[in-house]
Amino acid sequence: MNFKFFSLAALIVISLFSCAPKVTEISGTLINFKGDKINLEYNNKVTEVSVGTDGTFSSMVKLSQDSYVTLKCGRHIVKMYAFAGRDLTVNYNLEDRERIFNGDSKHLCEYLESKKSIAEKRDWYSLGEDEFLEEVRSFNEERKEILLDQNFNEEFNIKELACMEYETYTFVLNYVPYHGYSVEGEYVPSNKITDFCNNADFNKSELLKLSEYREFINLRATERGYTKNKSDQKLNMTLESANFIRDLNTLPEIKSYMIFNLVKPYVERRGTGAEIYSQLYTIFIDLCKDPEKVEEVAKFAAKWDKIAKGQPSPSFALKDINGETVSLTDLKGKYIYIDVWATWCGPCLGEIPHLMKLEEEMHGKDVTFVSLSTDRNKEQWENFVKKKEMGGVQLINDPSCTFCKDYMIFGIPRFILLDKEGRIVDNNAPRPSGKIKDVLLGLLN
Image (cartoon, rainbow, N blue to C red):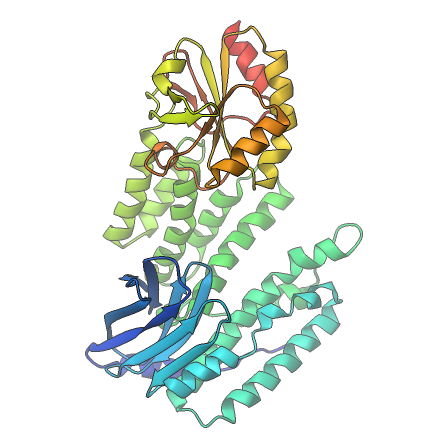
């Protein structure tokens, strides 16, 4: 299937004729918003904006051409379109999701709000390849016709068609893993699926301003890493994705973007301790051409270095189940196994029976078990701990405590093992359902 929606040459012409940056005010009111910060994303940039107690916000952004602007407040996302130098306002009710736009680009914003997204058609993943691709083709023809019937300006139409195209590439790329869940046995895609995205262009930096393009090229890299790992599980997915980016025949600025978006989340969430890190970082330094991005990754790496094996653990002083303050210093003298969890976390609850069994098996040995809850509802935490008759040292986190932040905890459960002096043995220790018992016995013997 030859799938091509728009003239890339036309998009390049638009980019070439971008004018000097014009100050554009993006403002509005957020109703039923509880926070004090939002993000505005435009042209691959992110600006943090303060929100007043009355829900109002305003930001002066510089646009060199008419641009998509995405407002993000928590999980709520509002995609808009702003004309360079002409103000745009939006009033958004987070409860009923009503949006009211004002400004010269109002009608374009209203179109984006009502536009059908192919990403909503996940039920198609259960279809066979031919039927799936026919549904994709038919759906795209329909929404292309709807767009062109609106009599919008040519620049907007060209960008929208490009967005549709790369959103579709992403959707089709995800067919392989999702379809695999719906069939018995192993699913091996035919060339109809694997060749579909061959029209995607990795050589046009102009497309980096489109979020749909950025999402696709990032997914393409991770998909290649996944495919390599599936054929040979000795290969690391992230490293193989980095190798794919390195070997890709594309522009340096696109490689730079792709490698940053691969390595940053890896270092942010997994740190620098893995065996592949030095290889991964070497590729990153070679490909990333933005000094600010290099510095950003270096800062995350430095944070992980502070909690590397052998380093003194960040401390805490938190209330226990009896309302008494317990500090890390109070617990020194034994190995300390810390479970960072919450009552609302399914995987955390799944580990509790294993943790209680482990405590029983290690009774009388030089190990202290600490459960540090991140619950915000103290009463709910207290009731849960008492009902389950949980042992060990039961603590609840305090917003002023930096322990979780210092340990770069972005997801739970997370387990941490310290030695008798409070030094780090493992900042991401095995779970109770895993091999932590063998680790503890090895340390104690």
